[in-house]
Length: 244
Image (tube, rainbow, N blue to C red; front, side, top):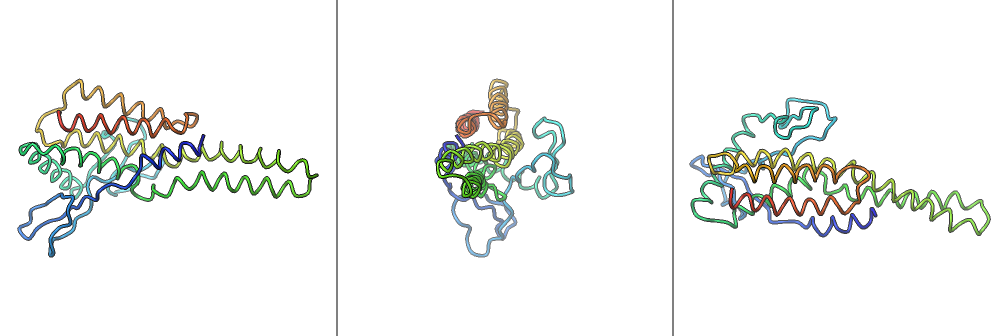
C-alpha cells in the first residue's frame, strides 16, 4: 500500500514552472514565470508555507494556533503581508486582462510549494527506507535459524516495514502537506484580486475539499487517497480562481 501511494505521489508531484518574485528599479513588485531582467532585486517567494502542528510558536514567518481553523491561526509579518498584497495586485491585473493562464498558474505554483517546499520533497524516501531496514532486520534475525524460516521471517518483516512506512508517510508528509495547503489556500481566497468575498457556494466547496484532504491524511487511510484528494482540490481551486 505504501509503495502504491508513493508511485501515485510521484506521478502527481512532477516539478512545475518556477515562479519569480522580484522588484524593479522603480520599486514595483512583479510576479512572473519568466526570469527577471538583470539588475532586478529578487524577493522571497510568497506566500510562506505553514508550520507543522506541534512545532514551537516563534516570531517567524507564520504562526499556527493549536486549534483547527485554517488561516485564523496564521499571523503574517509586514514582509509577508507585502508579498500577499503584491500577489493580490498581480491577480487583479490578470483578471482585468482576462489572463486565465496566470490565474491557474498561481494556484498551481502555490499548491506545488505547499506540497514540496521546505524539504518535504525528500520525505517520500522515508517509507522506502523503512521497508528496506525492516527487510534487512528480518534477514539478520533469520541467519541463525533453520533454512526454511528465512523466507517467512523476511516476508513478515517486510510487511511490518510496509505498515510502518505507511504511518511515516502520513505523519511526516501527508499531514504537513494538508496543514500547509489549507492555511495557504485560505489566505489565497482573500487575495484573489477580486476585491470582494468569495461566493458562498465556492467557499463551501473549498471547505469540503480541505476537510476531505485532512481526513485522507489520517494514519489508517489508503496511501493513494491523499494524492487523489490533492488532485481534486487542485481542480477545484483552479475553477474558483477563474470564476470567483
